Image 1 (cartoon, protein in one colour):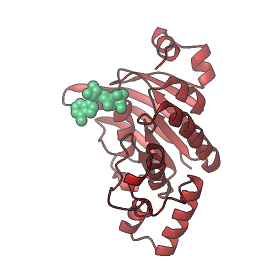
Image 2 (cartoon, rainbow, N blue to C red):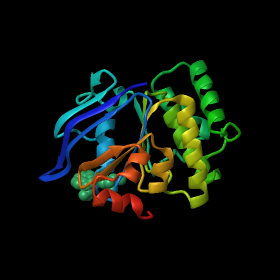
Image 3 (cartoon, rainbow, N blue to C red):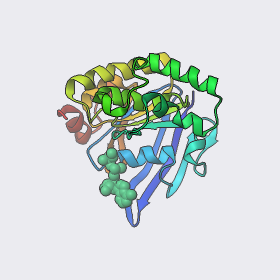
Length: 238
Ligand code: ADP
Ligand code: MG
């Protein structure tokens, strides 16, 4: 497991400031949900933690290490996106183990990881199918499987369920919660769905225009919003 700390993190695209001095301390094994309106900088913040974007200034620490100059593959993280591009011509098995193959991980170790993860996600009967033969929910499970086999200390989720229909979204939400209880990993999870945030989070970070307005437990945020923005955002349906 690992703590994640952001210290005075800024990100500019050209002259446009998108992340404006974010400080946040995420504890080992916490499930932090990042919410906020479209365009407020949620994905950018996650990409900075993942190393997919470079900081303009500030520090990001994962576990003991300042990771500012560490490439994504060495950051001990795995990311699941909204548009979970699976390889269409590869089987579920190959989609999940591909990353391990390219890293030269021993065959028996690959098989064991694949077995564990596919049971956990209830896709162990689907390993020989191609992505085109799966439902949306099953495809999203495969995408999660691909992240899980990396067995990182920190998971980053960017609106992983927003392409699913409402019923599946609720079902997968429960799965994600179970996964967290079972694995105890640190998770940073972006959503624009307030209900999802309230049900999943150990703490919620409410973001607006490059700032974190409030960081607290769902109860704190719901009962004591610090300002009208937080009250308005959390109080309105998504
Ligand atoms: P969110 O995920 O909260 O919807 P984003 O982090 O995607 O927001 O975007 C925040 C702001 O940064 C938006 O105004 C967006 O247009 C801008 N932005 C994001 N990525 C880039 C980029 N690569 N170049 C320029 N502007 C960007
Ligand atoms: Mg986004």
